[in-house]
Amino acid sequence: MTEQEAIDYAREKLHYFDEAASLSCKEIGDGNLNYVFRVIDDKTGQSLIIKQAGPVARISDEFIVSPDRNRIETDILRLQGTLAPGYVPEVYHYDAEKNCVVMEDLSDYTILRAAFLKHETYPKLAEHLSTFLVETLVSTSDLVLNHKEKKELVKSFTNPELCEITEDLVYTEPFYAHPRNDVFLGTRHFVEREIWGDKILALETAKLKFQFLTNAQALLHGDLHTGSIFVTQDATKIIDPEFAFYGPAGYDVGTIIANLIFAYVNAEHTSEGPSERESFQAYITTTIETLIDSFKTKFIQAFEAKATEHVARYDGFLEHYLQSVLEDATAVAGLELCRRIIGIAKVADITSIANTEARTKAEITCLTLGKAFILDRAKYQTGTDITNALKGATHV
Ligand code: SR1
Ligand code: MG
Image (tube, rainbow, N blue to C red):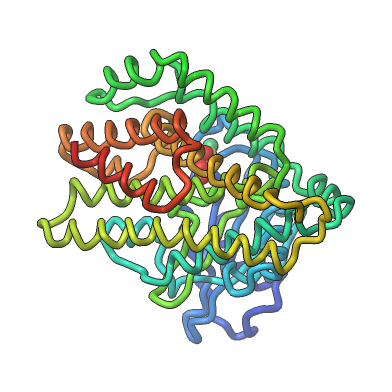
């Protein structure tokens, strides 16, 4: 679709705008996969988003990805809208022929990664994210759902191509000298010695990959980084769930923790002075601690209120289940910290650090922490376990 075709589509196919509307359109996608058109009526300011999936990824035509991801995104946005009302954009329309989904425009919101690059803070974020995570993960798991209904959802959200991207880019390529990796020169020696040269680390990533491949525990967002979150001071919306599938419940929790850590590391090297740095980093550590600790509290509450599976209520089961979710979350945070440094898909929090020495230091911080999270994942069970490790790795 071109911008003009998006305008024509909005006018002819969608009954959203007035006939007299004066429509204009801009392609605003900045992700790795899709095209995103914002169509606006210049007279009234009324607007909507058309997100179109092509047959290959925008980042590179090496990635052939089924446009069915658009159907998956539509279905999960609708489901999440009922499980966690107010936390996702409203879907207006899905078109299986054009492979596009039409949804609420969130132009009043800011993408969290962009806001974090300016060291802006959002005090309600941790409460919002922990609610969203618990509501979407617990309610789609075997703890709550009838197991046949859950298996129907597993079928419907089978997402092999997008999962393959994660299997390759998160769990595999960063941990050996794969040609698609893109290692910053200053960091290369550290990567060769501490990551690619560590057989114990390789073994742990293999175990985690098989956990990702086989543990259909809950319906995940699948790519919950700070570029998939829109914020205002009062509200949070989670977008872009095209990687959704049934996987380990800790996956989304771990991805967001790692991306909060990238923001913290960015502030270490780009703040205007100590007071900006300290206050932003204190905000990030509080956000990580509240996110994890509220996730645990809300998880237990949701379990008590909603669990239907008889054996899940045996003494000790909930503690066992939650502990393994947190262990997975820590491991995934570790994988995400490593893959965004070593692999093809980077994060601006790190690549925008202009000074070579500072960027190298930032990358080594992320890799050191990532490796510890993978190897010692069972040790991190509270928010402060994570933030103490973060402070330790940053201030060496
Ligand atoms: C080919 S897609 C690369 C990355 O972008 C997406 O947002 C996912 O994080 C994926 O790993
Ligand atoms: Mg995305």
